[in-house]
Length: 171
Image 1 (cartoon, rainbow, N blue to C red):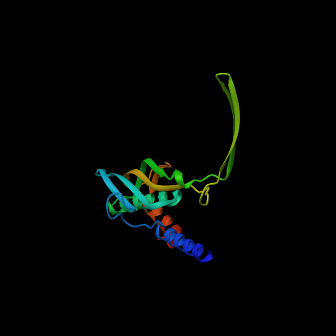
Image 2 (image 1 turned 120 degrees about the vertical axis):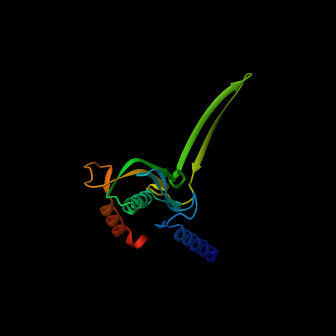
Image 3 (image 1 turned 120 degrees about the horizontal axis):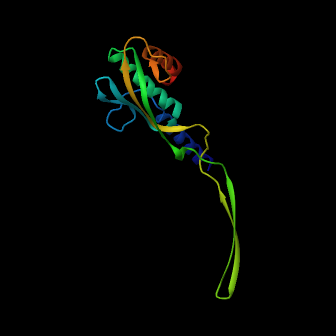
């Protein structure tokens, strides 16, 4: 029995490693990795899609990193994020155990009855307070020269350097 448990645990560990997000281009539409779609000459949708549910902050960082790289590839200095979309994985959030009690009574045709029920919920899997997401999409536009002093404007070189330095082991 212990042997079977160890085999299942090892398989789950390998599955978790195989689905760790990496900063790579998507090989086809809807596949894991980053992709972009031109809207105008200086405006793009930039998407990063994880291979499964992943840490939402990491998914957003990879989308920002792609926006920074794309800005620099287009010969621009900074980018502005007009809109952000995060495709959260609500199934990854599991609640802890819970107990519910129901009491009911009724009568019909001169007969009456009552009942009490107790339900127990024990979620399968380990719960996580960490926000999980499957993808992040940014609508960005590029700019040149001095970056505007606004929280939606990002210096492309700084973003690329900072995110790469922070995520170096994960890449």
